[in-house]
Image 1 (tube, rainbow, N blue to C red):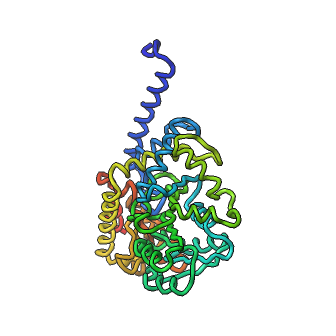
Image 2: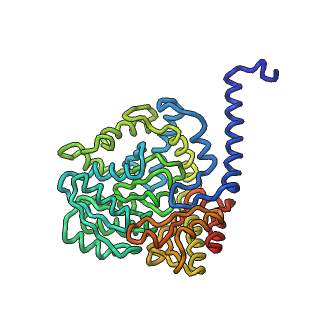
Image 3: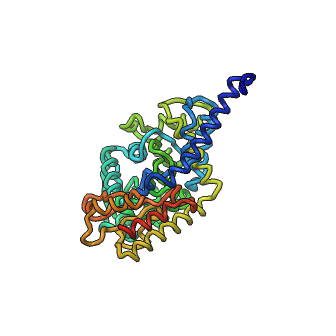
Length: 403
């Protein structure tokens, strides 16, 4: 009877509001109790406000609310990655590997030379993608846990001409951080015409990125790590000269789906707040993306990077006190979004991971094929790192001590 004189649209709006509030309460409870904390290098724990934005209800890709969220997200990606106004963001349906493919296939033509500054498993993958695109690939490697020196990069660039240089910002398999600022400087100094592509899947929004000031031409990532969403979005920001290189190709890219020519009109239309279509976007994830990026922009990226450094330092200091050895050979070469440690001598890997789980934390085993059974990985990025009220960080440290 209370609702007898109320219009149906008003009732529906009230019901949706109640549902969102209830979902937020349940999410807050579930993130702190009743289940283990997800502390792997992606997917990660998701902020309740962001998760709520993805789960509100289904959206059409031509609804005004979605158009606004899409356009706003494109603009905020420039801000988050410190890219200039001439750069072009892309929000594509897909994984981080799709973003890698989009970068390689749109730049490389047959027999173009590509250099991979390789720090692990995903450097190897980038090389495979570049070869599939038709490139002639050279890998510059270091020992596991280290990164090629800038002097080694300079020497190779001085000997051979490359169209593109690829680097992984943070390699998820090793936790090794490339010095992207130094890479950008040496590429600009020795081969200024070469394009610099950086895979930021495990780094973006946690390890510092100054895309335009550092001379990065493509920065690519995915939604499920420090960006703070479920998997499903491939994200790239592309410099103007990369688009010029694409436009000057002798033939279209071999990949139909990831061709910039298919997506560029769509991105420009949404940023102008007009719908366009090539393939259906994951609309709910885009609503969540806006919610996440708004938090980044409001809080400032410098503060976000500083918080990730603080949490990373605490995890690594605790591990050092326990006698655990990092996979990265030095702190300078170690990421702030994750940590990788060798198992203690004589410890059974499955039992160690099980003890961590009993301590309330899910961590990841090894990924690099040469040392897979010898080490484990912890993700400390995004919501788990940024919210001091969460118990996730303390859970990790307590579980490490108990394991």
